[in-house]
Image 1 (cartoon, rainbow, N blue to C red):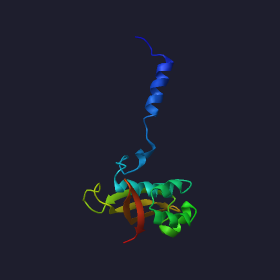
Image 2 (cartoon, rainbow, N blue to C red):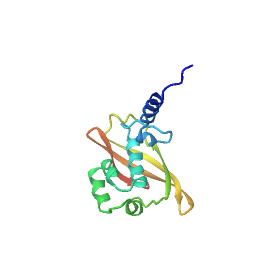
Image 3 (tube, helix red, strand yellow):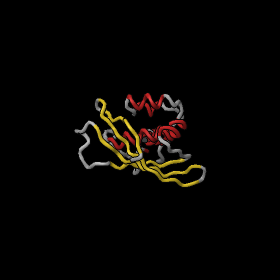
Image 4 (cartoon, rainbow, N blue to C red):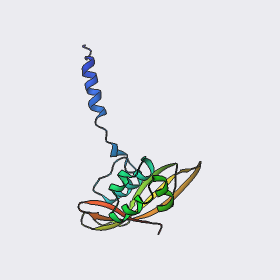
Length: 146
């Protein structure tokens, strides 16, 4: 039996490692269709809670919400003042508010559930997210408690 060469093993490992997708973390079970409004909602909050800046979150926000977020400058300020929901660590799970076909609608609502920690305390909360379709992309337009 012949042992494969080191270069072949390195090539196979690099191909396998390159198959991962950074966006695979979006969604409870690891993957979600990027064309769904639930994906846009989770992506928005994921950037607010896990990124160092607001650049990527702004790409998923409507122009109206984008202006509001920019005025708060930092992720922590947006968490505190816009969302009224702070976490040290958080898991974000979406649930569609309607069972309709989102590919034909121009706006929709998504319930987003948060479970995480703040100062060692376990916290659970929910927000209702209004999304609008801008071009072919879903954008977060408004976030509310009820």
